[in-house]
Amino acid sequence: MRMDQKPFDDKRIRLAMNYAANREAILKLVYFGYGEIPNSYMPKVNFWSDKVAVLPFDIEKAKQLVKEAGYDGTPIQLMVDTGNAPYRQIATILQQGWSQAGLKVEIVEFDVSTAFSMTQKGDYQAYVSYITSDINDDDELATLEGDYHGSTEAFFSRYKNDEVVGLLAQARQTSDKAKRAELYGKIQDIVYHDAYSVPLNFLPYVNAYENKVKSWLNITVGWWWLKQVWLDQ
Image (cartoon, rainbow, N blue to C red; front, side):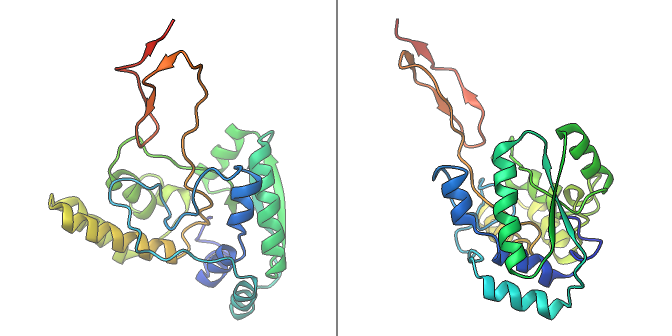
């Protein structure tokens, strides 16, 4: 979500969107049960904390927050990539929940290059997308998504929280693993409950291969580990 414009500049609206997101339905209907309801704004990597409480599906709570925020009925455009059937299905489930909460939601489609270009320029409101990490350390994505000083302005969200920026700096400056875990756990809790995004799924990497392929592995961040792969033929 782009947070420097209405209605997403109000944390209560963003939280309402989280409470009205039926993640269980998305997990079952879109991902066939593969994955895990997330408690973080970023992927589960090295210093992910299991102590952060998941925002539950609660339409009544969402309705209350929308009412408290004084939502004026301005339509929210939820953008998806043209031809991406799973994302379209996700958008439909989100639209249903958000509409029940009292928000007006329109689903709009653009080809993926146009949609991402619009996101980069800030010419969007909300976008069904994904993010993944290419290293098993929090700093890369925690900073990319949480620090508005960067070139992507908190991954195109315009999210601003100076406490988070300060904590990111502290975590970056220490090599003490316990301290880093403590700091990233705190960052995770703050950003997630700031409703930075509406995280939907910790999606595992799923690959198909023939039985003759042996010792195939995905490492945590999804890269194929081919060093010991061999063919039984």
